[in-house]
Image 1: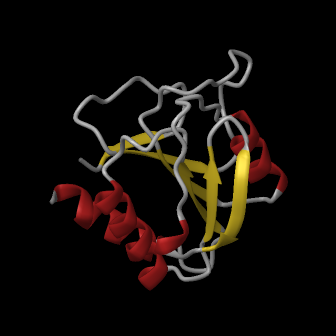
Image 2: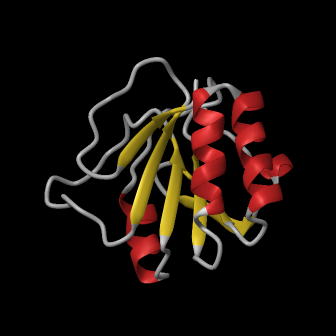
Length: 136
């Protein structure tokens, strides 16, 4: 429950900022109810958040809505396109729900926006930049 308070605080700090929430859709072996609850939290507290669904490519970018997530079973994910999109769109803060096992190019060692990796697992991987929040 510690992550709930942290997320509430972070979302309150995002007022007036351009925010996106990305969901890694590369596998359907994820805690779907947990992810839907996180999306609903954004929906209620920051309804102007953009919802990005991506795996090895960006599948969709829409206004936030928790019942629109479509998962795939191939297990391939890359964060490059989403991170480049966030830079181009001048996103202030990107929240990324993923297990952080996808591809990040070696030459990409920083981003020019605030980035939070929301990891719905007990295992917390090392990330090259941004901050990890365990939401399991």
